[in-house]
Image (tube, rainbow, N blue to C red; front, side, top):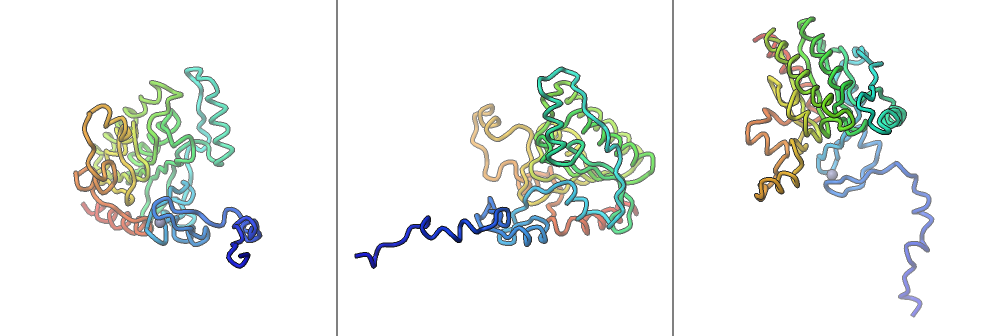
Length: 277
Ligand SMILES: [Zn+2]
């Protein structure tokens, strides 16, 4: 009955072996295999279901600012190991090499549709974009520059929270960034916070949720502690969609959910509106 004997996938293997790696990415939301080139062209949003993949700060800046307008600030600000945490600086160095970034946030000046802004873009690839002294200091300096130059400031958040390797110094960044934002608000200047996947911990509990306007990318996770910790602490079942951007919109924490392809135009529109107010 050899007629019915199917050849196994391994026997047919040439095609599988010939498939170049890195050309296809599987969408974690719908499971569709996406052609890497098409995914990049679509700003790393699934062409099938609209799932927003995390993107690098560089890709974000390219999509957001007018071409050639970005001038980086404080690129050479380096972490110190004040608590003597074993292996911390080696870890930072490894992430610097892996990502090509100095730290987990990129800050600077640029324009959006000709409007001058200060921006800070967190990059989740760098130690989960955890907030240590350098991240906090860079964001604070960007806010202070915006205040001094009478410009709006926009922060794109994505973070696992405070950086445990820096202990209390990391938690102090929450107060420092919030203080700078308070002075920015006193000067009646706009601050727009954009939440991206995932925004958690000390970042959520400080500058990320202090925006005059808080935007979020669709379905991104926003929370303080993770859902398992919340469930174990409260002993309550969590409502459906808990800690998503859509849930936060319904409950008033987020003002607007904006798809990545509409982000630049929406920010320009909002900035023009705020400039008139
Ligand atoms: Zn998808």
